[in-house]
Length: 198
Image 1: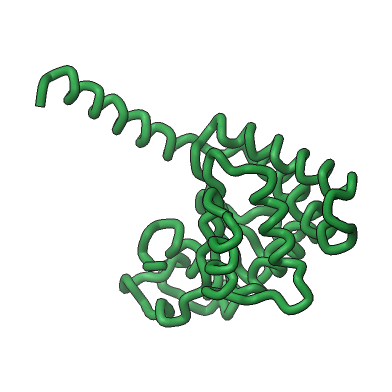
Image 2: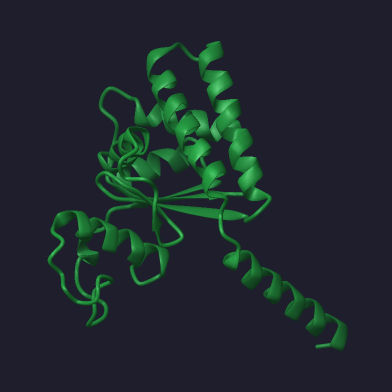
């Protein structure tokens, strides 16, 4: 391999490592989640093309676009009532975050990766699937999303076969006394850190 190609490959790898280390702006992420939750509700309430849907989707998309200036992929871990990003739980007292977490969790989703290049139509389609009268869940939901053209949102269904210890120590230092809430948080962390297959 010529020296120039090696240098370019090395530079690209350094940029990827640096990109992974960049923290996501908490305020932007919070605003994006809030707008995604509003747009999800609006898709369920109003007919396709309604101004309330398009304006909420546009706002969510704008926040996501700003986040993509920091990183090309944003993984959002989902527990029963909390959202997790970069080893941090978004304010679990915030009712909007809890509602958003519940809406994803009730569909059997453990995580979602927002990838640079996502289109507003993909967000609308995701919300249409989520707000169906009898939405599919888990793997069926992921397949339905893929069939409907969602390619820039990687949906991770809950895989109950992954519920076993990978390491000797739990995230809380081995205490393991936190109950089911910690179980879901540990599951989300496992997805984030590649300890669980999807």
